[in-house]
Length: 578
Image (cartoon, rainbow, N blue to C red):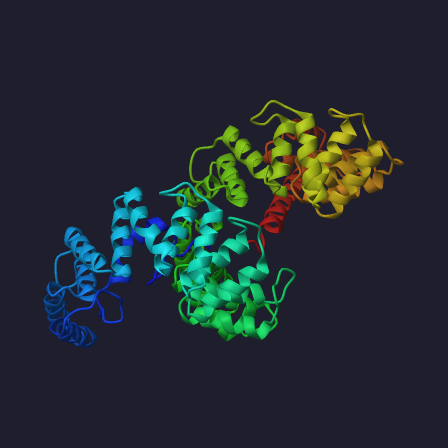
């Protein structure tokens, strides 16, 4: 949470204060402000102006302020400056605003002098502004002290000096300036201008919170919420402060309350949805993202894919990369509308460019498959490996596969092994089988058949087709364990069922020879035809050779078996997927 510079509204930086300017001098009356004594007539006009302003008659108020200002009322001149700066009942005119502020300042009005300094800062005339602010600060005027703190804290118009900023904030906060107390609390919390101290941070943030500052209330609630980093933890007090901030529209507090009622100690679906929706309506991208996922999945709300898309679009337009990735998935799957591959690819690219690892991985998949645009294998490998650099296990595996095969990159077994090792440590079965292949074949390392057996078994038992095939190879050859053709056949069968072409060929050869299974040329033909249909030239040559050795009735049965097998594999691979 950034610096706050206001008396009205939350402004994140000094520059924002200067651009939004006149909130502190909006003409709503001036009688409470200090200035040179005015005569009785001026006092009468000033009272009339305040009465008119209080009733909403700003035209009459301006006329009465003008009459009082012409009689040297500092408060009236200050109010007139606000009229011209804000364009209330007159055209906005900074020159006139500055003239009236200066008149009030010359009559001893410190608030007007501060407004003169503020206009000078808008013009980036820092030297002249300091000449106004520093004497006011020396006299202990809180607003001047606060602005000087902000100047040295913000690093836009002056070189940052955290120690000076903290001192100015402290002086202003000690006089009851609520925003100075808030910024001082942040300085202690973040260690700006001196050591960090959460206890002192909580002390000053609480002062600002008691003055009604919503940002301070929210931070006090967060700091006091029980947890490992809590300060003076008190669950009930924390919730009271979060509630106070949330009711003022503080989206961070609303989001924190949503978490409390959704996943904390007091699960309350109604309050959870209330505060998450409030934070989303308030423009918080993270809240919109979370709410979108609930609408997408139908959790805690009635499923509404159109609403989910709308919320994700809002979050993505705010720059939230995971929202762009999820939006890509919805377009790719036709959720909440028709399948739109080019749009999905565009959203994946948006997420990838924003350094979201899943966006990078999905964009790589789109490039590799030509989904929504042209194929680009080199580009796919680049994005796989960028996602892998962020420790995304499936991306590490894909990057390792590319280096193992030399697919879009120069083969590099060392790189492949590094990528596989990282993903395998996280339990990724495909990485485990890739690593098993490296150790089994001795690619860039000394062969380690026992290690290969261990890795391929873990991958195979997790359902990985390559792991099942490698385990079949190990049992067939007896490399790293005793030869066991029946076990080899079982694992080849499992891999073949998952679509692994080499396993389908190996299984067919076992059926031809009757090794580990009963000899069955019909089944052998069916598996060879299936592998050939999926692009295996070796399988097609073996299929033709086998066909020449079969009788016509046997070949007819084999072709029917092949058709049935291929239909069975298609059905098993596509069932139930969204």
